[in-house]
Image 1 (cartoon, helix red, strand yellow):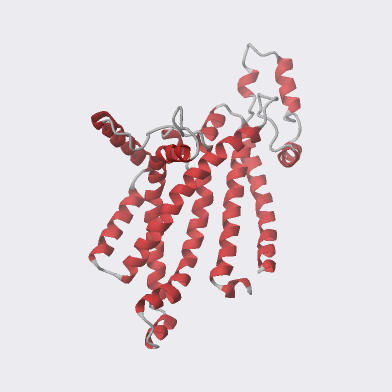
Image 2 (image 1 turned 180 degrees about the vertical axis):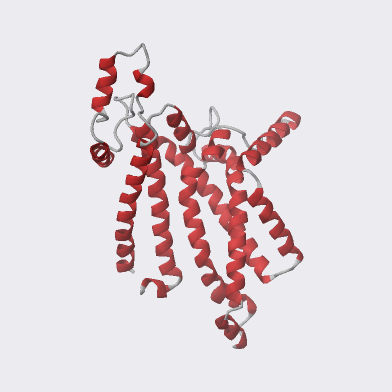
Length: 325
C-alpha cells in the first residue's frame, strides 16, 4: 500500500507543474496588470517603474514565471501587486478555513443523503420513492445556485420578520458577539447552514444519481447473484458485497467535487457575504492583482490534485486489486 501511495504522489508532481504553467501563462495573457496605473495622473512614472521592477514585470515572460515559482515556494506567494508590505498567504490563510468549513459541512451531509437515497432507489427500483428521488434529482441539477441562495435568504428573512425567530442567519460568518466554545460553533453553524444547504442540493442530486446507477450495475452482477444463491440474507448481500464496489464511481465524483468546490463556491460565498475564497477571488480579480489571482488559482488546483490523490488511495482501500496493478 505504501508503494502504491508513493507512486500516486509522484504522478501528482508533473500535474502540479503543468497546472502552475497553465495558470501563470493564462493569467499573464489577460494583459498588463499595471495598465490602469500607467494612465493614472496621480502616479509618477518612477513609481510605476518601481512596482514593475519589484515584481519583475519588465523581464521576459518565462523569467517572470521562474520568479513567481520561486516566490510561491520560498515566500508563500509573496506580496500583492500594489501592497509590498503585506503577504498573500496571510489573506489566504484567513479565508481558506472559512471555505473549508462550508465545504465539509455541505459535502458530509450531501454524501450521507446522496448515498442513502441512491442505494434505496436502486434496491426499490421503479418504486414510488425511486420516481420521487429521480424527479427531485433532476430538479436539483436544473436549479441555479444563485436563485436557490436568494430564495433561502428571502424565506428565512421573512420568518425572522414575521415571528422574530432566528433559525439561521442569511449573511456573514458569525454574530457580533458569538461567544466561545460550544456557543461559538452553534453560532457558526447557524451562519453556514443556508450556504451549505445551497451547495448540498446539487451535490445530493449528483451523488444520488451516481450511486443509484452504480448500485444497479453491481446488484445485477454475477458475484452478487452467487452470494444470493448461497443463501445469504439480502441485507448482508447489499451492504457487504454490493455496496463497497458500488462506492468506487462515487469516490471519483465526490473527490473531484470536494476539490472543485474550494474554488467553485464563489457565487454562494458572495451572496451570503462569507469571508471565504470566493469573495477574495472576486475582489482581487476586479482590482487586477494578478499575483493574488494566481495564488488563488494555484491553491484551487492543488486542492483538486490533492483530492484526486485521496480518491486514488481510497480506490486501493476499497478494491485491493487496484493497488497491485
